[in-house]
Image (cartoon, rainbow, N blue to C red):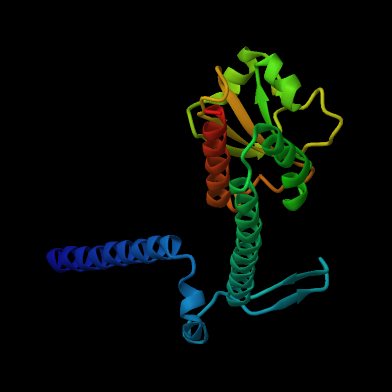
Length: 234
């Protein structure tokens, strides 16, 4: 009798372990494929969920079913995908136009004038400019002058693009009468400047906090860098 009881317990335990393992595999699969229900939405009607919609008179709160919660979040996820795609499409058009402008430039004065005074308007930004520790170049082309130590503290590695909220301790915008909330900073690798220099994009909103259009902005930064290399040979 004891032997049978022991065998029975072992069978139950094995089944429980297998079920737990299977559940974990399903959970991991769904976490790795967050758009699974978007692609297979028809199966939602065949699944069982914890509870139905309930209205609580005491707390004046509404508890939605787990199924509805999933559908609501999937819609939100899908909306984010569509908004990102739209943002990338519009940004791509703007970057293509900006690159066409840059390719037509053959002198330094015109390049820096267009970069400072026109590009930021096309991208609805507060500014696009270059930060340099070369005082003479900053005066000649109306660039942003900062101490070499400050630039080196931000620079990191060559061709690095960082998109984030403005770090006020870095003091990049202390001499600029503009409200910059978020920025993208590209570490230039160009012969035009003797020391480390930064290409900066400044926004008065949260535009650079979610890395939207990162690859497109990185590509534009590389184009500007290449143009600087061309102009340095003049």
